[in-house]
Amino acid sequence: MNKIFKTLAVTALTFSTNSAVMANNDPIDFSALTGEYVSTNPGLEIAVPSWTRVDNNSDGKIDGYDFHFDVYKLGTKTQLFSTPVQYLPYFLSACTRFYPNGKNIDFKRISSNVVLSASLTTGCGSKEKLIGHVYAVNISAAGKTPWVKSFSGRLLGTGILPDKNGNGIGELSVILETGVPNEDEYSEDPIYSDNIIYVYDGETGASLATPQKYAIQR
Image 1 (cartoon, rainbow, N blue to C red):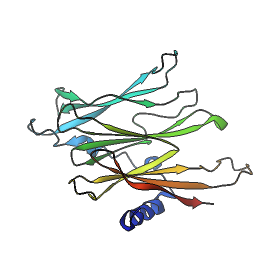
Image 2 (cartoon, one colour; image 1 turned 45 degrees about the vertical axis):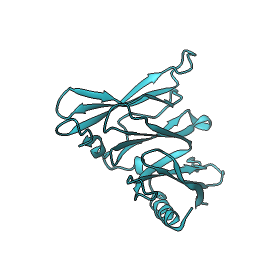
Image 3 (cartoon, rainbow, N blue to C red; image 1 turned 60 degrees about the vertical axis):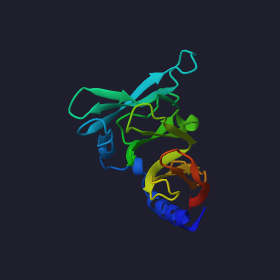
Image 4 (spheres, rainbow, N blue to C red; image 1 turned 90 degrees about the vertical axis):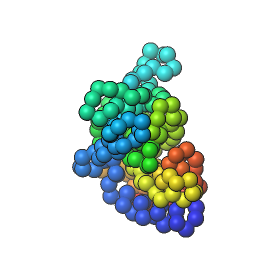
């Protein structure tokens, strides 16, 4: 990781130690979903997130979502196109906590790309599992291929970085927490957590820096 990326990483991690970006008390910022994206359509467009629960392995149990964006001409029901569907694993249970419009999702815009990040908690107690997904797609026209990243751990949030590889598109940083401390105040388990930072090309999803783990809480 070069000096610039390391500086950005440490700064981002410092702000992530006290509260997760997608778990604070502020309203969700949906501004990335509305804008001038499609040059062939006069005016603005809105990208509407679409979540469909699916049984991906056909075992009779819901095990995730098929996700995509429906792009409309703003202020109308005129649908211009839908982005390609991607399956996002999500193992539902009686105590699963995820709401498609809840505080565990976030949206960002990088040039003509809309980025969804979702932090999912599944299972109960000792079987609780934390997973995260990033779905990014160029919505300037129909048929653009999205890029998707999935993570094991708590996805704290994402950030937009300046263009570092000269393609004219900004980059995306992703911060993940692993080794989440036991929240039982009577537990004798050690309290520890680490943050891992990833940096991806905002257009293609190609990795631009070696993921690094930093000790946050001991």
